[in-house]
Length: 248
Image (cartoon, rainbow, N blue to C red; front, side, top):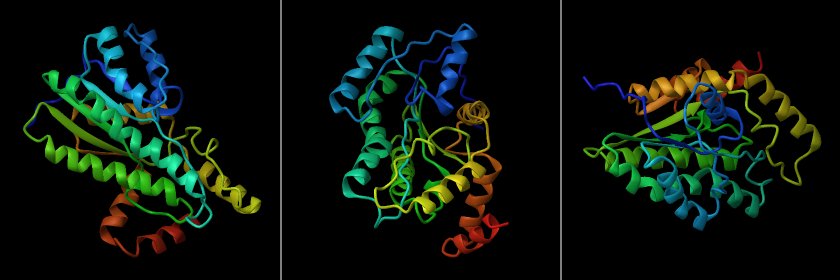
């Protein structure tokens, strides 16, 4: 049986800590945990390349890398322009690759390290109207799974996280394609507001427990678990079933 991953005394690097799931770092400071904030544009290749040195200087190394930063972009593939699609992929997927490449030397230096990549339930199911976002989250899932296989036998483990409806501001802050009809945009936002229900701090607790258990895949929320099960049972026809459930 694999022994639990002890989070005590670990140095964790968490991107996207300004709001949502990553915001819990501020709460840890109040509990006496040493926290340092670093302003970083995860799309800036040079800044990401230099960032591990800043972390090492502040904390002596790194044990956990949590790639949590992400953005959203509503719209079908034909509605979303090329530049917007590339912008989202650069942050949601490209940054995960860059941060992992930059921090792997520090993680290898740890006696027991974890890479935790936040995908989405949209990295398991593929709803219409989320072409770019879903593509990026499927990419994070695939990259994480390959990385886990390649790092097997090393001191670095990999977890991929699939949150369901967590009440963050990602949907409110999503980019909207210029040609998207206003009524369609409003309807999409109303739907997302109904789905985004879990408090971010609760999501953070589930992820932390998953890390402690060294879970390869961490499903956050009953909605994520149900959708993942349905996709496994009906990998082609699951969306027809989900559409009916969402109309109730």
